[in-house]
Image 1: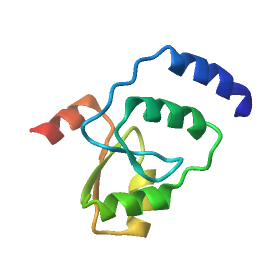
Image 2: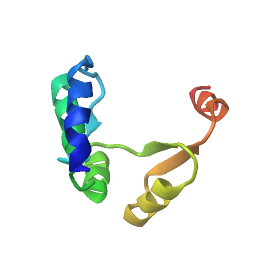
Image 3: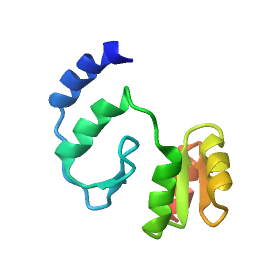
Image 4: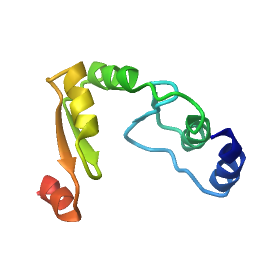
Length: 104
């Protein structure tokens, strides 16, 4: 994917990333990030870096996360989370209606 990294970096450089209130746990470093410019940089790095899934989920649990949402078709991430810990409830969301039901 290194061939695509320059193009992604160019597109991301043209995109404004705001700081966020809720931290994002970046797959590249398995640490929470809130600064928009850091998120943008990590997205470029993520394209060619290993995903640190277990580290990210363990970090989330250490921060008190007890619930998650898997957006998209399938339940792969929910299954992976079960192997790490069954204490975190993951809800799969495949449709807009299912997402809206979570908010209600």
